[in-house]
Length: 128
Image (cartoon, rainbow, N blue to C red; front, side):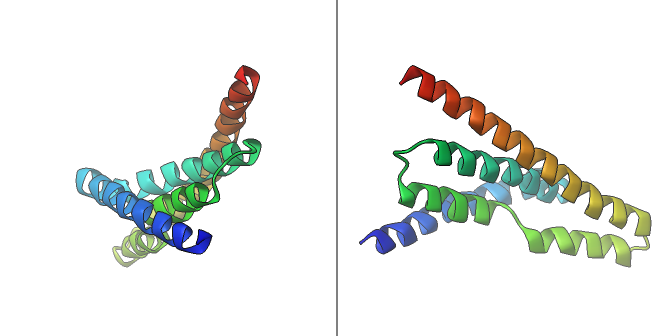
């Protein structure tokens, strides 16, 4: 039964994650991919470390939010395609900057997500 609940949770949250990414791409075009990926780095780290600190977290919820929502929200393939398009357009430095800058910023956003999760979970644990 837990397996079915996990699959349903992933499907449900993936729907919303995909819609959110589509909305960002429509609103911000090329930059929508960057925004989605960086927010995804923050969210996945936040969710992972927040739920690790909470002893009563539900597996179906963490799986749905992490694999479903964040997995559908972020896009490694579009990130690489955008870098490739820059290369094909003769923007070699722009492609290098986009590629390395996004990866470096992703680490920073993941670190910030971990810090925010530890802070939020600590506050919840203090309140009981």
